Every structure is written in C-alpha cells, then in structure tokens.
Length: 256
Image (cartoon, rainbow, N blue to C red; front, side):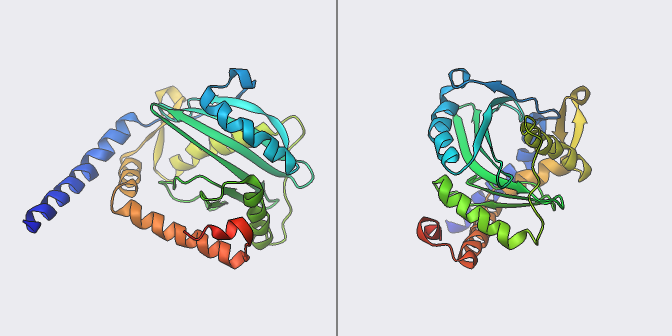
C-alpha cells in the first residue's frame, strides 16, 4: 500500500515539474518600462488604501517624508502594483509600502532601503515571498515577514547598514526625482534577467518573457520539496542575522 502511495506522490511531483514550466513560460511577462502615475488616496483601490493609510503616519513618525502614492500598473502578468514612496532626507534612506493585487489575492509589505556610494543596495523588508531567480550581487536583501511594525524593522535596517556598509555613505536623489530611484530598480530587473539567460525581450520590446531555462528553474524552485528547503534555510539565515545584531525587544521574537 505504502509503495503505491509513494509512486503516486512521485508521479504527481514529476507531472508538475514537467507541466509547470510550460504553463509558466506561456503566461509570464514582465514590463520593460515602469511608469508610475501619482494618485490620491481616493483614486487607490480599497485593497491598497487600507494598507497605505495606517503606514503613512508610521513612516512619517520615523522621519520619512511621503513623496507620493503611485499606480505602477501591470508590471507582471495579471497583477496591479501600487506603491507609497518615502524618503528620509537626513539619512538618505528610502522606504515604501507595496501592494500587489492579482485575481483573488492581495499581497503587501513594507521596506527600507539604502543605496551606498559604491553602488550596493541594502534592503530590509517584510516580504515573505522568496525570489525564484539568482540574487543580484549588487543587492543585499533581508526579509523579516514576522516584524509587523515599521519602527522595529527600521531599527534592524540601521543595524544592518552599520554591519554591511563597509564605510560607504548613503546615496540620495535630487529633490523632486526621488521616484526615479524605484523606476531604475524595477526596470533593471528584466534587463538583468535577460543577461543571465532567464528572460528575453518580446512583444515588440514591451515585455520580457521567460526562456526555457528561466521557466524551468523558477518553477522547480517554487515546487515541493525544494520550496520547503529554501524557506527553512532562509529563515535560519535571517534568524542568525538577528541574533548577531543582538536585537532586543519585539524584533528579537522573530526566531520562528
């Protein structure tokens, strides 16, 4: 009996590992251009406004100025992205609250980021979704989805800066052009994945689509049992970071 069960499991896993890349490659697309449109709270969908409203005063209490709320449109297939963007002019740190709306699902997180004068970007966020592609060597991204308060996450971000900045200062943006920083990061995403063979330009240059290499590797990283192992290893890595920083109070409780 157990032998038959394991055979069924193996067949199911094998099926999704074969069919999954085909489905992903046929549906995935990522826009080559990011053109955020400034919107008021009244123009935001309820899903985004409900997450922006409590976070805006919290970010402002930390010394961040609201640059604006933006509708970024359909960056990835079948999604709509909305961003509230902030800058701390004293430290040249940036923060944002991001909400992605897709059919039947809403995902949101907040983050703090600092670009150093050597080009390295250090980002600390609450996004629980692990990337399915190789890390950008110029980015150091730390994810702590169990931290629920901006103050706690910002404390961790500043400590990570002290640990990893290696003496380099924070790079700001010209006043009035702060949102262009986010635009560059988003638009570099597709271009970098084209260089490493995961995507290619399609649709007359309007979108990036997945190569077979990209479709296969991204799908397999998202499927059981690989996804469970990746989550466990990453959680251990983030817990180790918190322990090394000797974080106290609320953030020290993130040792899940």
